Image (cartoon, rainbow, N blue to C red; front, side, top):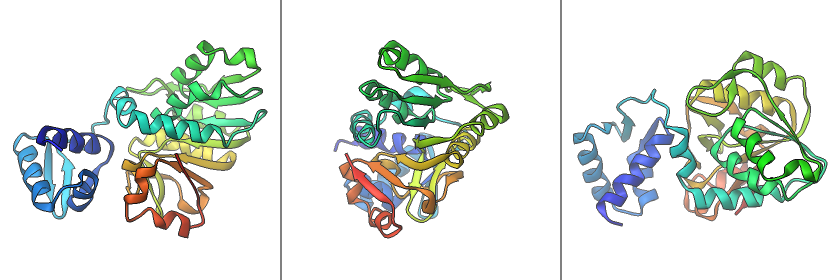
Length: 257
């Protein structure tokens, strides 16, 4: 992997997580610790990160990465995860979808089913399902009202959480920033986490959609403890992470795309 490719990969990881260990970066990039150390020193000199004991953090960790950047990151893996997740659904199901990047990609697969009721705070999810002809297959899309989320085409806030509580769904399909076998699924943005938690509480089963870069990671706000996760859908590269085996040990069903 070329130096600039490594830099881009490190930037992409830091765009999603509040902090990373140097060991995790080295494993993800498939390079030595010394190469990782040199890369982190160089990026720190550029002002893009700050080194701490054992790892790095963003200089401004409070800054949420743009939604479009999240949508493009690991796009091929997210599409494979979306295809695998749709196979867990049945016609007639009522499902919650949060406004994550993977759930947005999933809408293109959902229209292959019929008789779904989709409850979502994602405005673009609703728009894409309508454009793909979901109504022609008897699918209903209910947009959860509330305050417009900053930087993301979605609703959030107390009104959204209260509206979620009015419904009961067969499944909640959620796309977190991070998922850990002992600490569960978490998000960086507190508003997103509050919506996801409400969906977890109002669903019979909870399905977490997370590509390999999110495995074994933690973010600011846990919205679904590991013991409440029914299914984790991830891609094959997740098997390389040392934390991966912990999901099966916790009793979580793992689907590899």
